[in-house]
Length: 421
Image 1 (cartoon, helix red, strand yellow):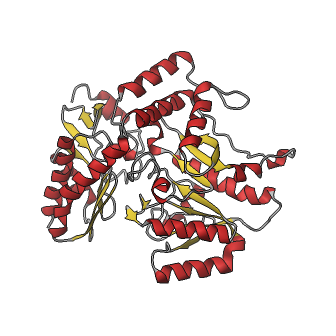
Image 2: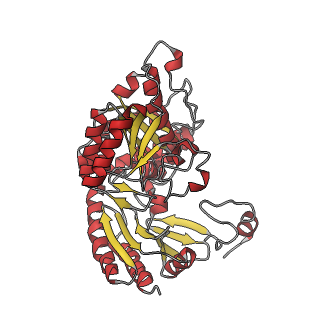
Image 3: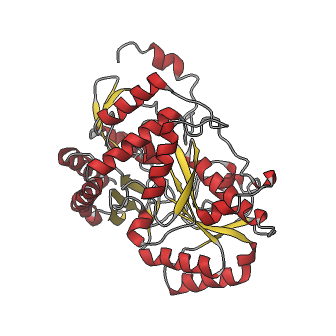
């Protein structure tokens, strides 16, 4: 590795995410990225199978997005949205409302997915308070769900299987139940709502795929039932599409494939094509109307410092250009077919519990992974960057990945999973 000083000295001060710093192997130093490739400082190239936590939907360094960022940086990198606006943020808000399912009319921008979900929860709670209805302060969320790492979002993640059980005494108590997937769970869900709906501000779900909770899939009937239940009990339905949005499940948004529209929707991850932090919370006119008032107390008192950042909005607008000009949804379908072929043989391997594919998401679920670090190391040796978690080995590649690189990914997983003892 050329000139390791920046690596050796800086590593003593960095605190890495989701990592036991004492025992983790040293992180790989990255020199540059291109397409679906990560080029390491030592010269090795890895095919990226997870698009940097599902963000780089058009691959790395897409020239159209890079050009938009450069032009915006030269003109206006950032201004506060307190009393000021700029063209990129207004254009992006209009475009997102036009793309979103149902009748989304307003967009509140933030800088991370967790904050977008917190804003959604705050919106939903204040929606009732502004209507002078008290007591609706809890949310109904689902086992297997994951919505972020901040305090409010940790409280609506799976309390047992998720990453946040350590904080159970700190977190607000919400209602976590099974998704209504079958007759038994549907009956339990309906009974719960009959008894507790008047305590709830809303229902929060990741549509079609629960991502970081285990890449768990559910079918369209689940979301239709949630919409009917929300309407019956006058509850707000919130779709967390931070993972599922922007073509990941095969439709622009997971809710598009279902024909079910939420009252509030959160977006992030692929919003800027994997370049800059930006997230959004979209709301219907019905929700926004509860805040439209002569009373200052009815305003949504939230405002991330960098919300609506001009550089990030320029990147997001450029990313939406690419979705309009190039058929990313067909690409997702092609990726799904290739992953089904490439990962399907893993079902024959000892210790493999399931193989499943939805859109540009491919999952090999194992009985267990005894040594995650060793599994990651072996995948790197095969020339790929894949980051298994818990008992899941998964792929969420860029929608622009070519067949050769995709085959490299699926072949690597077959080899590594097939050689497990």
